[in-house]
Image (tube, rainbow, N blue to C red; front, side, top):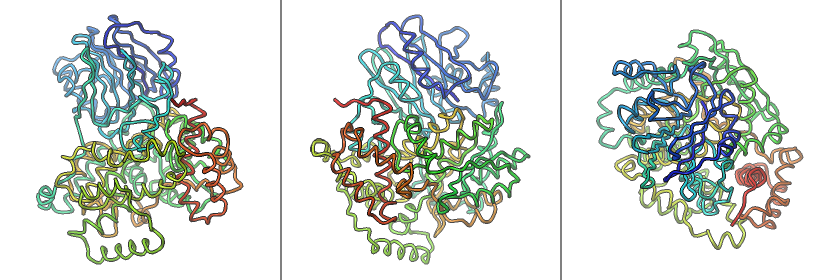
Length: 640
């Protein structure tokens, strides 16, 4: 697990080694064990690399080149099942010079070209330069677990594992106003830094003298209605057994390392299952790391984490997180995520990761991504009840429908945005998570400045998101699968895996390994009927049944519980709220190009008189706006 920065010239140029070093220093936390650079003798490409060593500790330094020096590569991430692939490549004449898992990608490219990435299993981003044909490739893993950003300035292209590396080598930190107005920093490949984009998950980019070309090598392929009928020929028990087998294998692969591997456990189904499987496969008690909110029982999952740990005889390490801790780590968390978030759970996760590092661990297994892939969110149950109830229990559908109607009567009077209504018309059904997210962030519309509203209010960001989706992956699929696909193409890589995954873990110089996002597992789960993901009142049904033998009954029967930190406004006299209040009513807010300062002050005054339920709903907006203020301060953002 590492980080890198690269400069690519379409025509030969001169490389400033100091700029490369600035880029490496900016992401030193990603690779404190080793640093190295490589310069193409023809002046086209420069590589700089920082390494966190987990496999091939003594001889895995990068960049890595073929023996003739014609192909050079850098990898951030891990490749699993690399011993088998290595043996196969050696039988075909490939001569390895390191024991690192990364080297297999070099020879897969040598034998298969860019198609070689299809043989890779794991979470990764990589860049490769082929001097023979003067082609530069950049590739990102299938789900977007590992980050990869790029920018173009004149004759030069810049690539980096984090945005701050690109800023350090000369890209200006300018706000992308349209990306914020359209929420393209969540729903597309845009960031809040103008001209800096992310490489799409499951895609590659090629740069040569003719410019840039890109394409996809993988996508989520949910079962069509016709394929559902084929799947029905298999019994439910057979499908559960198949999922169980692949998850076990995914965990087994991620236990391989030359350093100790621990687990993160929240007390929910996903992380508890990973802990149980890892314990059974390793044949020893695992070290499990958990964060607790002792001052907020409604948000504290410690009782369930203890149950999961005791069930597996794990050594449970718990770090307690207070309001003061969240305030003290908020700014640093924004520095590492490089994007705002809507709940302080990202800050709490950073505190946990620092605790893991201080405990002597470099790598942990996590349960990240299961809700998106297995159907774990309540929004999916709503979609089932309203739009996708075929083959479902009528009593369960009736019960859910009553709950939905009651929720609407209790005050959900929000109207759909016109662009979301347009999407619903295209799909012929609603998409609950999209509608909910838009409603939660709708208070922002009343806080924008007149100038910002005038310039960007009519951009229809959700329509832009839908227009850029691969419609072939929507055709013939069920409403639940539509919803899951759209979520996995936006919020999974751009929120979950950014603000709770790699960026937070690597901030503490540790590696997170999410076995439930193994692409073989994902391919299998996508191929199954939607009623095996949402079944009656049970979400993540097939995951729950597949891991049943590895979790205690209290976890098996537990209802979905979001991993959330307490709302910022829960303690109106606390350090976190006071920090947020100062940010939103002070000079930093006036520097932001989005909001009207007077409207924001009025919003904060209303907040102090709101009910606890109202404050909780407003917390999404509150936390995002505070994060934008911290971005302004930490990155010295400019507006043109």
